[in-house]
Structure formats: C-alpha cells, structure tokens
Image (cartoon, rainbow, N blue to C red; front, side):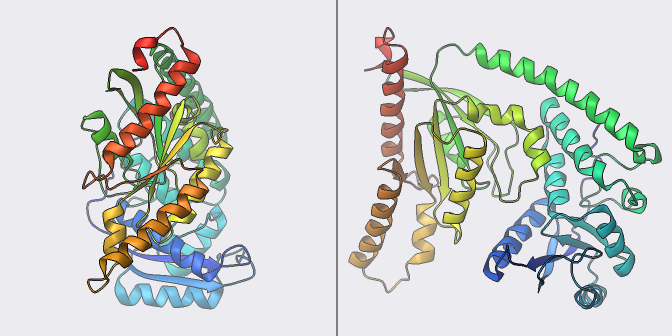
Length: 396
C-alpha cells in the first residue's frame, strides 16, 4: 500500500532544467519553468536557479549536453542544491546517468506531479489512483534504476513504490498494477452507483487549469467549506454539493485541476474522478484571467476536455481573479475611462470567442457573482425543461 511517511521535513534546494527544441520555443520553456517552480514550491522545494539549453533534440544519455550538465553540477555544488528537476520526462537510464555525473538526486516533471498527488491523496480512491500511476510510471524505468529506487534520504520524488529490492522485479510490479486496477475497478463501481443514486438532478461541474479558483467559487455558490489553497492540485477528490437557486436544485461538483504535460498514466488512473466531468450536464470552465499565460491555460483545458469527449457540453466560461487582473494591468496614473475601455475590449473579445457564454468575476471580492448565478440558473432551467418537462416546479 502506498505510504506518505516521507513527507518533506525540510525544504530542498532545487535547480530546474528545461530544453528549447523545435517543439518548444524559448518563451514557452521560460513559462513552463515558471510553472515547474510553482510545482516545486507546492512539493516543498525552494528553486535556486533555472537552466535551459537550446538543442535540436534531447541528448539520449543525459537529456542536456555534457557542457551544460557540468555547468549545472558546478552551480549546484556552489549553492548547496540537493535536487535537479527536469521539465520533461526522463528515461530511467537518463536519470541514472545524470545522477552518476552530478552526484545529485534527479527527478522529472511527472515524478514531481506524482509526488504532489501522493501527498494530497486522502481517500482510499485517490490513494489507489496515485499508487497505480506511480507503478505505471515506474515500470518502463525499472531497468538500471536500482540506485534511483534505493534512496533513503527522503524528500521530493521518493514517496511511494519502489524502495525495496523485491519491487524492482518487473513481474511483481506488473502484478501490483493488475491488483491495483482491480481494486480501483471496485471503487469505481461504487462511485458509479453513488452517482446513479443522485436521481434526475442536473449536474454542473467546475473545470479548469489548476489553481484558478474553482474551489473558492464552489464555496461561494454552494455556501459550503471546500478546501481552497493557493497551491497546485489543492483538490484531488471530486466534491459534490446540492445547490438550490430560486427553488431550482442542481448538483455542483469541484474537480481536479488540469495542467500542461499532465502525465498520461495519471490521467488514466484518475479516470473515475474525471468521469464527473464526462457525466456532467453543464461545465463551468474557470480561467485565471490575471495569469500572463491564461490563454494558453484556457487552450490546455479545452484540449483536455476534447480528449475526454466533454467539450461539446453546454459551457459557461468564468474569467476569475478580475481584481488581480486590474492590479497587474493598471497603474495608479491610468485614467478611469481608459481602464474601463481596456476592460470592455477584453470582455467584448471573449464574448465573441465564447458566443456570449462568459462571465468576468472576482471570487475573492465576490464581484459579479450574482451575474454568474443567473447564468447558471438559466442554463439549469433550460435543461430541466428539455429533459424533464414534468418537473415544472424547477422552472420558476
């Protein structure tokens, strides 16, 4: 069973490493490294420096070139850095080679995300999902990874399976994956039964990039206390509440946040959690409009929804953190009419791009929340009228 006993006792000093290739521009890599820094902070590490190199393709032995790796090693020694985090997936042999050449513990983005999920998992379902994803991540990296698996020091990237000799055996890892899938199938069956027991209520699901404010909006709309924190993946389990707007009831669910480069095996393991998105009648796509790369995040979520075959559902795009957008965009000398013009142009653009299905809010300041409630109410009532015309008590 997955154990989280090695939760970070001290902050590890980390160096982040990215690669500029034909597929990733320098600007994109800088943005990805900023996000990787946030992930590292969520896991408890302190980022000392970010490195990146321009290569046509990753080095098959050490991902980055020999000279760059030596530069990273020397900098790490001078600053006392204990951890290298690479923004792209590494093979088992690359991890071993990098650790051999530098003497520094090395993990990749997937390993880091799995570490965060392992810490955040609270329920039996989430723990099983994370454990399965960890073994699936481990399986193709077993060859030559004994030293990587044998770490005793604790810290980021060391939680979960793979710390005893017997678990380095490929057959046993495969057996564990089979057992975990069976266990998860039973849990999924129970979860499906629970969802079926919810009756004929219209179901609304909050979706969006991680850390955009979904849980805060959930708390406001449902008047409940769902865990909300300014960290990535604060919510792993789906939380569902019954909400009533003007005598019209519906179910509102808060789901796990999406992120770019989310490990495929993690998506597969969290299939049952993502079923809440697939089975929803209406989606509230929450976007952090204050984030410099919010349009990219918006695209990542839409692409994920397409992969989940959920993109064609009725949707309201909720541009959140309007207060932070104004704070970061407007300086104190800007005249009020200019500020209003900038805001109007922003809203008009997204009204066009979403066919009028968007709202701009500040969940923290509770600005435009009534407008959001009204939008939701109209969509919920329309669906009730369409699907359950005999439930006239829900329409008015």
